[in-house]
Length: 417
View 1 (tube, rainbow, N blue to C red):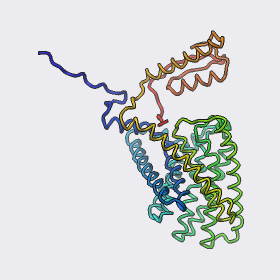
View 2: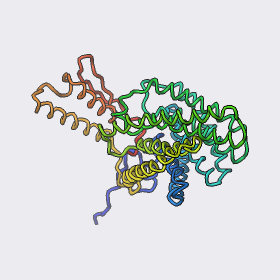
View 3: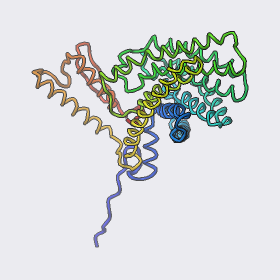
View 4: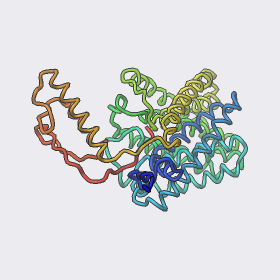
């Protein structure tokens, strides 16, 4: 009698079986990039904006941010235990400081909800994280910089905001005194980063270019919180006018960034989801938050009114980005996302190159193809992006010829975008 046996289910490249719970969890963990902490930053600051007028929506955003924070903390621990090479690579990038910034933002929101012990604990965690990550990030600094590098300033100012917020609660003048140098150091980091920022990011960035303005916005918020805390505790009485004026100046400088940032989005719309779009949500929310603080310390009601209007802009964008997040992560949770193999990536690359060749032939450029001379810089850029995105290593010689070679196993984190 013939044995009627089903063929064994094939393994996927990561060593797991499709549809198994373990494979889904492992793939999800592998697909979470270091910049995912921007989800906590964005949802946390929108929760702060909604706190005074929309407590229910604010609470929803708060617990979403807290849930994501816990998930990412687990991912961080898992990588430290199981993927130490990747962990070491990620902690040396500026994106790692989004964890510090997200923790500080979440702590500030918890302090507003009177969860003071939890907020104080998060201040300690974020301060320790900042101290541990600062030197590795600076040692591996690369120029020109992208928008995410401004998180060096954001993380430092986040500590100042949370410290000044808790200073009022605990009547701790030393926290105000510590927040002032954090504010100044954050501004120094901003100048350091801005001097190396590639302005082309305004047209090519995938969302993190907004942090260029958001970093100044959180600086204005930090100055406003310090001014408020110093007044409540009777500190820096002689410098009160200086602090107030500094808050207003920083708010104005942050507003200056709005025009080029919005213009860049209009000229080059980037509507597909990318995890770095949460780095757009955060500055939008921070513009509202700093407007509330600036309006309060300066007494200019128009600035506060702008904050109320801008809150809904930030909330709307956060919903759109949240929808994109769920749409892209749902196939993974359902087990329908098949990890791409190296051969599959090569096939897509060669197909894309063939498509470029057909387009070139249609324009009369018959000598286009692998190994051919590419005279148009735009085409060279497209081809090199394809090579990098698929893990292939290639070289462009001085005449523009493409000489692709395949460099072994693919490396690098895979984002949810």
